[in-house]
Image (cartoon, rainbow, N blue to C red; front, side):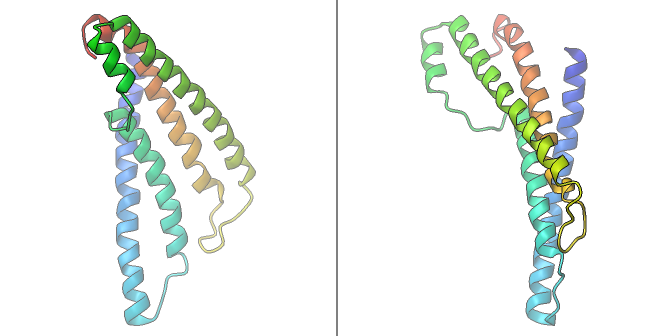
Length: 166
């Protein structure tokens, strides 16, 4: 458990850093591209593609960082009703079921993300001339991070309810 926690802490920091890098890249390239288009008449042929791929990476890394930091959206109506009835066991069971469903979803997405990444290895992007597997790699990597974070949450769930953490 301690090893998984350390891995997830490192992955969370990496996801935060990559999100910042890709969002910063978008925030720099778009205004420069707009300026070039309207004031100099010159445009970067790669700018749109760069921003699209950066957005994919920022979305996946941001999702992993958000999951690690507890920033994801949740519907908690049933959980709150169970908490009002002071049924810790039912709340923990519900949370465990949610985590298992998430883990299954992440495994499916990791599998298909890897399939797509491999399938697009030989395809080259039209303007940046990079392998299309690079933009596609954001999907399995992001979902692997989310899988590991959720696995840690599932494993630590009983201890959190024993100590009254949730």
